[in-house]
Image 1 (cartoon, rainbow, N blue to C red):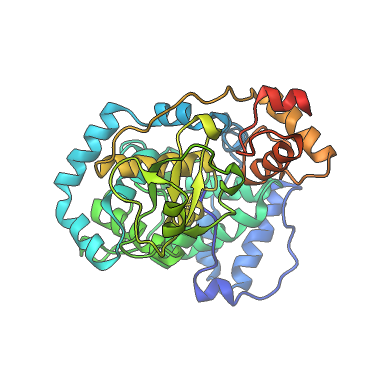
Image 2: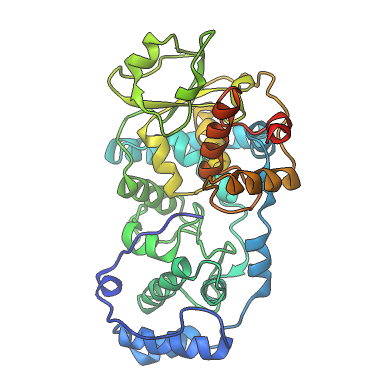
Length: 390
């Protein structure tokens, strides 16, 4: 789920209103939304048209709670998402849409591998865009009290798209979280970064490949993508590497990493003055990568570490990198074990970001601190041995 930013001036300048933020009667919640939309300056007939027939979709809530795939370790997650068919389809699409990718690389500095990777993972190159009603999904998630601050603003952006004739609240469908089109963009992102790539005067992300790809590239640039810089390189590490230097919080120039004995497994490490971090998604026994500022930008598209790492790696594959060296990582933890670990770490005073069974950035940092305290290799990869020690 893409991290969100405020977009149109209409949204930014909205007056303060005292509506229910979430929960309560669904019908009453919708009436509050209608009034807030009018207070924001939307025409009453447009608002009524947008909300006509809106319903709470409990399948959306179920999908929001059902995200266990993000608990898989990197090598398993990558194996699940990266198939021979996806690689071959990526290469075919790169050839078919070569002129568009050339234009994107020239105008935006976003490489085709990155866009192909997200296009593949989000919708299988447009084949599976989701069949949830977009309006109902957004209103349902805004009514639910888990993350209303994320989804409520998207409703007003969707109303603006509807007013412009770019979203039919009755028929527009997409992902369960309200994203639309081949690269799955939220309404605010469409307002801010939608591009008419095929020149027909409309931004049509569900059916136009040029529109979808160029809009995705424009959004990445808006999020901070640095033109013509790398995002990830698989590396080999020297014997005796100080694993306390691994992890996204530690950044050093590429030249300094090279002096510490880090080498690219294929190709080169990148410009010596470019900032980079060493990540090892499954600890010191598994694959390792050097990642650069553009890698961090991808977390604005999806907040999951394993998803972003896999998408970034797949992008390198599509641009010619070899299959990663899986190594021999130590076994990880099952869901119940991970939650037990998070509870123990939290009880010891660490901020793990929630007891959810997912190895996120805060849990990794807490694991690394616990490993260092216990005299274990501080690589941020939780193992049964660490759980036993705790």
